[in-house]
Length: 383
DNA sequence: CATACGTGGGA
DNA sequence: TTCCCAAGTAT
Image (cartoon, rainbow, N blue to C red; front, top):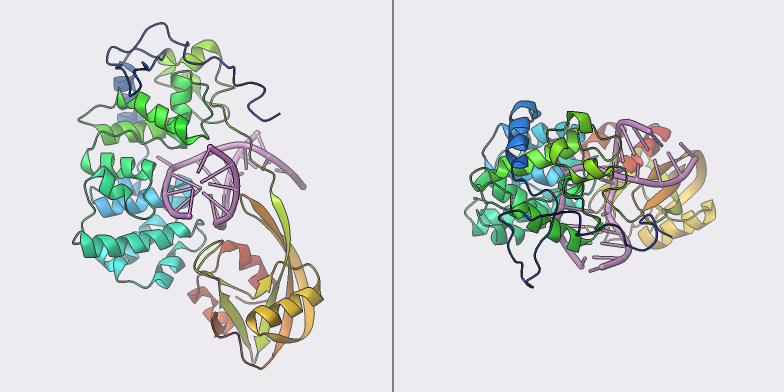
């Protein structure tokens, strides 16, 4: 049995007694039925947003590039975290053209610790496309935005509405939660089809003249009041319109499939030492932590297996491997149980197709290293 | 459609 | 400790 309980026989569709005046027949001729039929909730929401919204740096600008960067950083990432990165990134890469002509390594370095590094790689690649094919101007068109790497359904709608006033609902996790509760919808919000449905619902309410404020207001409501746990319904400007509140469904909506169990991987990493310097290895461009620097290592439990793996994959020969400690690092989908070794290098040719750097401890901050390896550097006494 | 892809905070 | 969750996208 999953988190959704038994059959999906939850209340669905019939939650309302009437239809929004503007609701129209959708593609298949099926009317969208929902309970919150009073469109007055939109003005309540906009009024609340006007007075209570947070003052965030990307709300001070109308520069599409700056809005673009903020939306990429905010993907799956909390505002508090983005605030630590966004000003630095904009200061270092203030325009699309400057970003496009900067080395990827510099972009990854600024992104270090923020996670989901494909975002940084895609943003950089998209900047080169915008610079070359759009004269450095982000296109003001949903389909053209959607065609850029790293910009999906949500982000295209967010940029389009905020930067260009295009009336398209931006349905992120906040908006999905708000929509599920406000309209009493029992669909699994983890399914893409649900997000499409929610987008169609919101499309009937999005104000043509203020789509950006509307989208941000919905998300802000989800971030500040309509919380996943312990939502602050008494403070909510939409409490009188909310189906879930009226029917006491707040605790069960939104419905979501439970996450798969995390895989546990035993990994060893080595501080390969030679004349006061340590060897860093650049991970392959694609995949987990792609393009970032690491201490050479592998998913092998025993010291002997790790030694032979490093010899085989990278051409590294080591003297005695001394254990310097261990720690765990959790990702969404897996957990690394990492043992850290120190070993002197036996000089010899390294595997030529891989990228390496010999660094002194003082140079470590110049390299983009993910959070997963920072405890290792500490255990090795580097930095 | 399901899964890979980071990190840090909170319960 | 463990799990959930966050301004999702690519494949």
